[in-house]
Image (cartoon, rainbow, N blue to C red):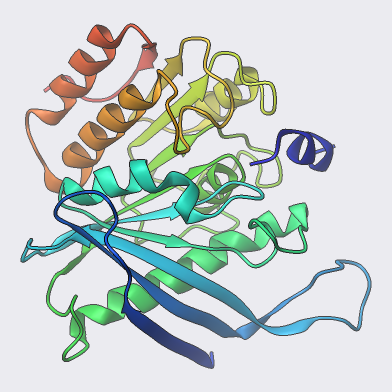
Length: 300
């Protein structure tokens, strides 16, 4: 997500197709696949407030990562990328989630992705995009002959996202755009800008992760979102962490903690793993790169 861009910005007919399996992900035991999804019931507006140039449909190419040999059913993590990003920018994180036994679903948004005509305020339309994509992917569970037929656990769904995608995720928890299928959430460098603090009730378990030195969305904004969110919840502060580096592909020293802590959280919320919360706390404590500044998750 571009730093200057977001800093400046924040002043049912369906068409569904899919491609063949994509090349190997680089993570042993993980397959990936691209779905070519379009929500034909809506429009894409490249110039909000200027009528007449709306484009029919919301084109949402969606990358899936999932275990190659896991019979399922696989709980679902739907991930929203940041402004001027794309799912491939997070492949290390998303592949690790898939390797842990989850179906990771990552749409590319039409007006906030890398190479698009960037319309920052279109973030407010992205919670509906996520809900549409989630419906299409869950339908694959009953699609005869599909590689994911019979392998999807639609009762356990985490919404996750980074930056603009974290705003999208918070929207899915908000009365404006709540999706009742979401059972937990991960908010990476999030803020309540554009979506507000009217969380739907009851809340879902949510892990907030934010870099201490984020100079795009300062950590004070992440803390504000956290304070407004209902429990159960926890806030993981990344020591000296920036806005994008701990989450996107690369060699940031905080990235291993992000991957391990979020995977632990997913194991707890989606797989009911009784040891996962203790491992999350242990991983943070041993990391030297972050700390739980508040922890309102269960103790057993």
